[in-house]
Length: 207
Image 1 (cartoon, rainbow, N blue to C red):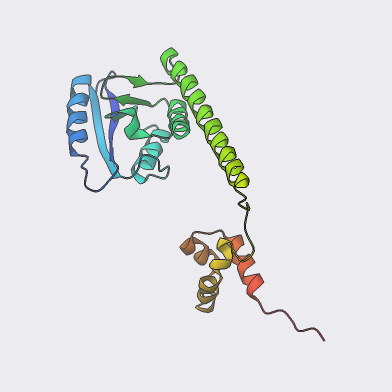
Image 2 (cartoon, rainbow, N blue to C red):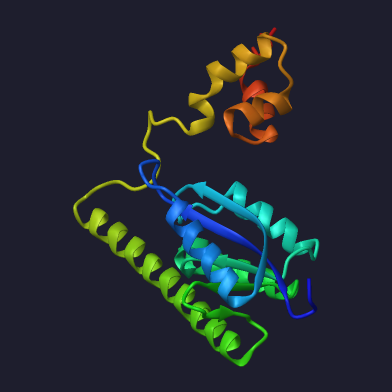
């Protein structure tokens, strides 16, 4: 590999199982050959772009952190991330490891370049706008609900998630499962499991 050749990985993503990554991969392989990238690996996954915990993308971030790649090749930036804040966060992390995200159009997203800094500023502004807009919508929705006479907050008789999970938690405890295992299995914190177990314990009778 010559000093000018950059190490890259291809990242392809589709949102649903009836779609295929193969076209993205074929196009990106041709693009890499034309642009002089050495493709070390191909990572693909089927998952919504709004999801933040993506296995294949996490693998690429690990490679970047280990300084094993110089670039991530994507068909378009939205394949890498659709959440503006999430996109900005990952681009900032990659920039810290001197790794670029390169779209098939040839546009390179390097946040340490003038173009990249301008883009980061724009993304940060958009992310803040999205947060402000969501906040306004929530406030407007609450005000409208209040105007209709709807009571806000948890109503009497409505049980929080931890209460609804009490039977499952106690059954697993009876089976001898550890609190940590139960928390992981039910997708709750260990402290929540402890609180449920404590509440479910029979209270001592008063003398």
